[in-house]
Length: 528
Figure (cartoon, rainbow, N blue to C red):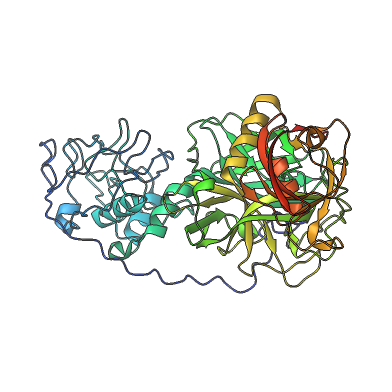
């Protein structure tokens, strides 16, 4: 949901009452013996050394100088005890005190009073030195807290198994920047904290302006050099802006201009490219087809312009499809004469902005979640319990409000599954656009047809010589399954057909005269 606001207004909109910080559930970290060696001495091995981290992940937190610090995905592990104040003030040069194989992290001196004040405010040890300059050291308790968080995500590599080139002591964990995932109580670090620490560096805030119109949304980093996936309705202000100006802010506060690589209004996805970007933190994709109802979800984005906001919930439904009004939708929809959303509760949430009056709509397959999704979350990440991407947030259901001022989250939000996001974004990066399957039939809801007593997509008309015709479908057939997904109405069928690339072959199951028939259909190409 992008948040469209006039450019003359505050881009954050009116947030209403001051947000309240919910309590963090207690999850004490286990103590283990650990000592801090003298500078330059060999590091003692921990009591038990976990397996090495998968390639590309290390138990480190993001920093101002190293925003790409990864997080290992293997755990739980026994956390080292929090060193005393005296131990915390010891230098960190030389071998890492928490693991024999850890990458060394030379001490980096901070050079501004800002760092001194920040470190003191958050309890980090400081050392003014003979020149009165802060040393930039971090309170050991903070480091341990971040390490505990890193280890909780899907199982961490443990403190002794850092990936090559990664520093286990980020130099700016404690800052006043909103990019930091704050850990104030190291005895209460939980899995949500760990997921947030892993995902937040891969989510950006997108500001869009075109003439007197503007809005904000979110995006997810695909590559270190600046390819970002988001929603079409974010970067086009739902079809209002053909050539918008894009400004992208990363989680660590860096600001980039960006250009649109390509949009895909059929599935409301788009890819943009940040100008002169490097060293960004790409998201790691999960297989959304492996999800279960009840799995943990974490949504990360910029609702109401509030960057780096984290909300949590579960997968509340799968195999869901929604039809949603979209002014950016292509004129030709092929298989069904799609209309506007009418009284449908599903919508792009535009907050204080003005949504276009749409006469067309799109059908998309989605993951349903109760993680709070609000204006500005559109294009942001929906992550699983391992901190991997399972979806791109796209829409909400609403029980009130108008199209120009809809209500916020009611706990029914929708995300485009990661397998679809991956396929479409890859095609856009390679070709500037994505393709979509075409069935070659006009379909409707079976439940709305006379004398039909089952759910499914009813074949109203078959295009002669088209894919459906070649697969043997005829008028009056009721499609109950496509590509392994259940079909309960026309929206389900169209959404699953569009999810596949043009030319794809998929199994289809339909009922004719009470008999169930299975076939394969090779899809055509949707003309956009």
